[in-house]
Image 1 (cartoon, rainbow, N blue to C red):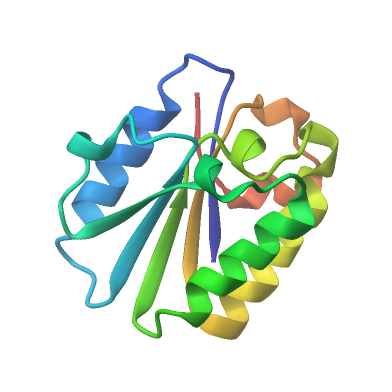
Image 2 (image 1 turned 180 degrees about the vertical axis):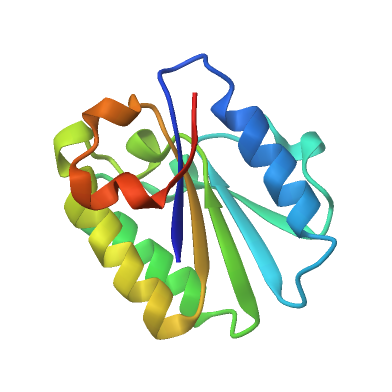
Length: 139
């Protein structure tokens, strides 16, 4: 399952994402990974959540990002949820490429039973109709 938290930069998406991940860690039986563009939020995350600073891994395009996600999943069979903050930056995409990347993540989610919660700096009206049902928070 892919869930989207959307809104322009500065609207509070990261706070929603951090609140959601810190709440979820209490109830999940598997592991949780939080991907971000830096380690800035390290101390705001529960210590059971693995933070990955994606900028350290020299990802330069969306295909490399999908490969990176697949690698993370392949190394942790207990992985249950992944949270992506600053999605457009960490996935190296612009707004027009969101739909195919989300579609790939949806397939990965189904195949490996990993849920994705994604923060994207776009307004809800900038999303295609096919993604509107995945939006859980719009700021």
